[in-house]
Length: 223
Length: 113
Image (cartoon, rainbow over all chains, first blue to last red; front, side, top):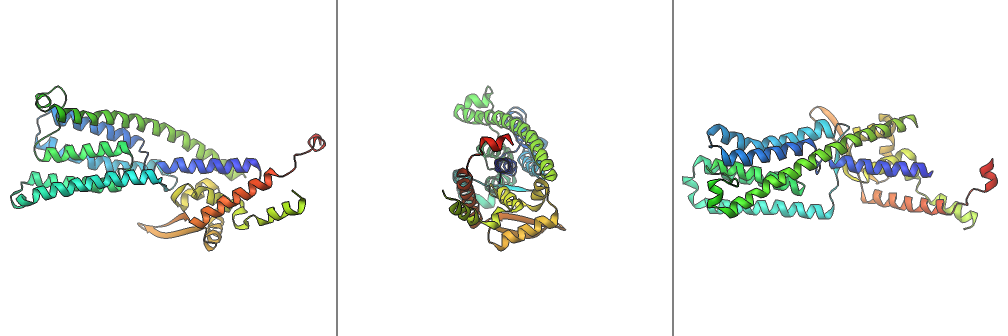
């Protein structure tokens, strides 16, 4: 086997590894959408009066985002065939830890709500359902740290608006009344901006990857 | 290294891995958890039948696992490299690197020709 063949095999390994990222950790345009949803949820939830239509829209955002991620991966980023990314041990541990925290929070919230379970309003029941949905989403879909933070915010904001609240936006009366919560909430739009940047960068990398994969296929066909 | 021992090392290379199409399949699988048959077909440029034949040999050798199912009404074939497959590929690379390293450099006269 010549050095050229060795190089080609190494290139193929690296192309496959890169392509596999788009099955899990790299979202591309779906990450951009998630970031935009996060910004919209933060601003609209905190600034606009929460009518029923707005509440429903904010509840729908995390679910729409997860759907968009799946559709983007299957129909665009993994169009050449599904290749499942291999997680490193560290990534797997971090993911399990994050998912474990969401399950723990869901259990604690449920235990806290259990004594009043009979008297819970529909909004509070929806709150509980969304907290458990977050645990499921964190386990199944929110693989990278940025995805986890943005997904957690979208679900938490959706749960809060169901109960009639929202995270305070910096500069509003609610933020002045509760500065620690306002500062914590500020973390989410900042993470959203990072996720948008990463999404754009992943999308560009994918376009170059696709071109390299097509070149490789043509070369393999000729050989 | 003497010529006979070099020949011995060449002969010791895993023939199951050495075939280019099978080497390509393993190279694709080694960095992924699971790979759909369609992706292999796209990047290898091999025909379905040829690919299936090599896949069968690798599966029989215990180097890969093949999972067949349906997505809706479409048949779906997914491949995964086994621990033995990873080891075989790593051993093959190591063996090949040793053989290549100890090959004599081409002489000036041979280069002129």
